[in-house]
Length: 352
Image 1: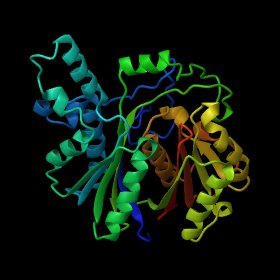
Image 2 (image 1 turned 30 degrees about the horizontal axis):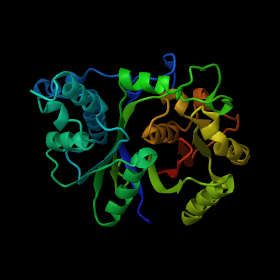
Image 3 (image 1 turned 90 degrees about the horizontal axis):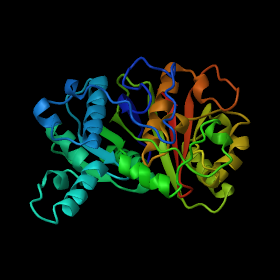
Image 4 (image 1 turned 90 degrees about the vertical axis):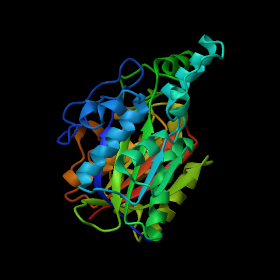
């Protein structure tokens, strides 16, 4: 694919104060014991009250983040809506299943069931925007958001001009407790994620959307390309995938200004990234982002938001730095993300 996707608008709801468009890592909200919760805005400013009262948290976060992106892009409509999620509207799924048990499978209201499907967020956005064109939701675990990016690039190759893409994830108290009992969590927040020596993640949630355009307009960065690696067997395999992506776009790892890495804090899942770190740190400024949002299926969307901000501000904030290398001009950012040691993705962003 040779088409670039210019980021002309973005909106993010995360555990940090990303709802403030002027926020740039000045104040960092810490993890709550062993998980992150999203800092949610006043939804009534973005969603009509009659619709708001029937929406679950994931839908509210998704619709609001999408609205923030569209407002930022100063567009009225888009040619396609592509969303990604790992768990979907988990809260509504939970409500419906509990209602089945508590009501002994009788007198069930359909609202929670209707809104529990993974594509509910995309459909709600389409109804509000009156966008009846291409609308797709990807549920590909750790590749969910990255597949949206891939699809958007292909859609632009076929003539689409403006596309809304995003990743949505929510957690519930019951889900958090189940993961805690299964010992999937770590409450150790005394170290940076890339220094983790223990098992267990700190889970997060959030919703991040982007408006992509096939023309530069008011964009400060663009997505050059993306590639994937599923269950790689070695660091060399990951490095080969990165090299091939960069070669396709006439560059190399030595020429990348910033490498943004998705360490989870769990040593058993981060081992390949830890082995890769010394190689990428030689010539590039390195940073990581999941210590701000936690680990979840579509954390890559938040990572893309961070990368876009780095290019816009031409600065790598102290809060996310790994090494002390600085660049006078940041022209390229490579995102190396991983999910549970299974899904590895590599996204190249460049300055417009």
